[in-house]
Image (cartoon, rainbow over all chains, first blue to last red):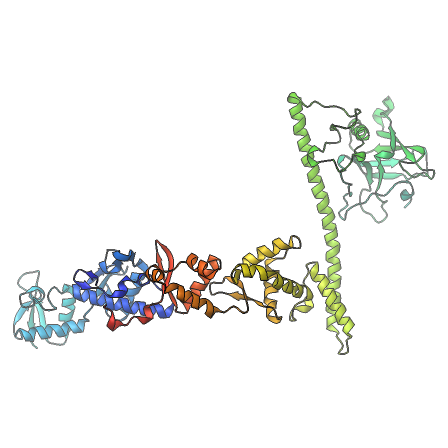
Length: 179
Length: 426
């Protein structure tokens, strides 16, 4: 079994045509499907939030068979994720892609769960604590991308579940839950 | 014309240029020249024409083409027996220069080299001219007797000018220097003159060709109009013969390269039908050798090479192939998605080819590293370009998928369809 770090790679990762963008429609659809799933799984497992197209993303190459995805192919697969609402381009030039292996709504749900789990309903905490505090360790929230977290929090704020306010220090914001 | 009784006619092209004999080169042209015989009033007095001296003849052409212009005539140099030198006198300085020479004539007075009698002919040079120079060239031409040269031995490179040396000709010919600077200059001159001659010959041919072509086109047009007229008033009881003749005419027209207007919708005129059948016969053997599929471009080259002459155009070939549908021939034209056109046996089956491809790509090393066009070419027994077309077609059908890398363009059996998302780990 091949691994990329701790991540287990599927067997078709060694199939060379997997790395060439297929022109035939049905074949292409299947290929895109497999790549979408693989990217999401990998990002979830490795907690990767941003993929930079001009950087070396380990998933996009397979040294063992000496193949790697062309730029065109990378754009094609990431664009498919964007269309699905599972990713977003962070810039107009499509150089960086934010991967939402949880949708924002899902993150929001996770936050609510986290708050309930830890009895923080009436507490005030900081954004930083949510993402790197001791309670969050071992949860999916640990190490979450800050901008994603902010969006999830804002979503909840919009629903009246919490309030975000400027904290004591200028770097961090505070959050008061009212679930 | 009266002149015809005394002087042989000179043939002209449609554009008025003289038709020269093989090996005949013009050496001097004088305008506004009269030709007459001072001693015989019956001899035609030709006025103010163009005089052309060649190494074979003297030609006199009328100036312009009014309706009543005299016919162009010539005097073969072989009939000239003597040229008189210019009279130098006080009188001659102020009068129009005349060149006199003696020619043999028949008893009727007609200029002929075999004639037993002779008369003196005078050329009156009314236009701007250098009589001395002309006379010199006239003398040379007469001396050299180029019209007697045997054509078989003459080569283009050796063609001399009217004043050139004839190596090997009798000792009468002037020997020009062949060594030293003079020799080099001499050789340059000769080369230049032979090029000049070739150019003249070429233009001569072109003129002749153009005049013939014009005639042909006019004739073809007449035929075409006749055919069109014929097809328009076809009575229901039109005789088979008539139609037969019309088909023949169409065929004839086509064979001289002109498309017939009445056959647009029909099965194609006889010419293309014949060509089509001939092609079907011809292509059988190359097709076998090529493993059942042969590129149309290759057929074009092979067919034309075999024909040698009467080459056909790519359009003819395409038309001939498309006619195959209408006959019962064992071959067919096929166009791949990529646009490449090939000829195949009708009996050819794609499925059979795909079956062979499938067995090729499921071999152990092919599963590992795929298959290239050359690999497939060897297995299928066709040219690599043909093999690639088949591989691409198989890919289009979902049988194969591609792998493009620095190693090249390869094909693998398509496993995508078999991959089950839930069962991706071994």
